[in-house]
Image (tube, rainbow, N blue to C red; front, side):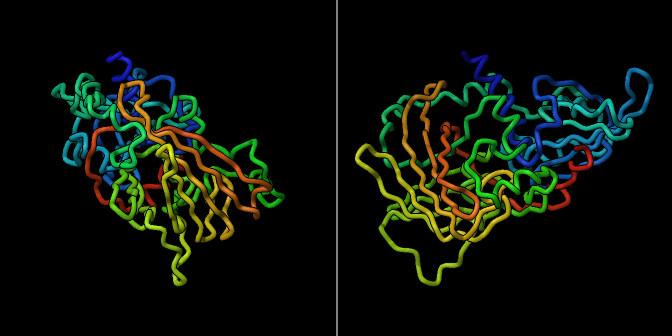
Length: 355
């Protein structure tokens, strides 16, 4: 079991690199090793990029661009900007772009999972055993099922096939209006607003691959995402207050919550601004959007730790003929601090040349 857990976590290291990419172009079912010399390092949000030059088995010089996760994510694992610099010889383990064979040698690319430096040390520096050990939750966590606290660092739980599809295409079975269907019919992944550092807000942020931190206060719950700017932080008010008359419409809206008899948290949100791709990949949202979420704690995680089971129902008569409900699961992970996230448009869109 420890080996399986460790393997899953090693994949999750790279999974966060997928959050701002179309996964269609990458072979996520296997990795390759690419050894060469670092020619360029871009330590920027939403993902770090390394450019590597190598000579392949046929004696041809290749240039590889490898995108990883956020700088903050790497820093939490001990992988720093100074860990690899221009001129270093390194072996990267990457998920290759499926179009590499169709491209010239100087336009190869992949999604970065891990690295081995010339001295044999690895990045991230934590071993598989350390990663596995970090998933073991204290015994006292079992008593939190049904708790109203909800505090902690939570990771979205997905299997590989789900990760491959997440954010790559619009939902195919949603009950769309003519306006919504027209957007799906004209879908182009390269026009994703995130490539311009435009955030989608709720409900899409609920399904982000990046971690989120829930912090419980007496009158509210604050939710901070690992890879969204601070103006996308959510506040769920628990004191019964109404939306202020001067509230400025936003991508995250105004949220209030209460606990039902079984301890589930029910959240209602309105006050949304119109947002590009604000419902789902390829589908905009309007100011008429409303959102109802339901969260429940359980100790049913496969690692033996806490799990948060959730659902959300979104309504938007401009783009949806009827409400849509989506289900998901978060797992409680090690608590940690997030580095300040500032999205760089050049970094966010750089990978488009390889699509």
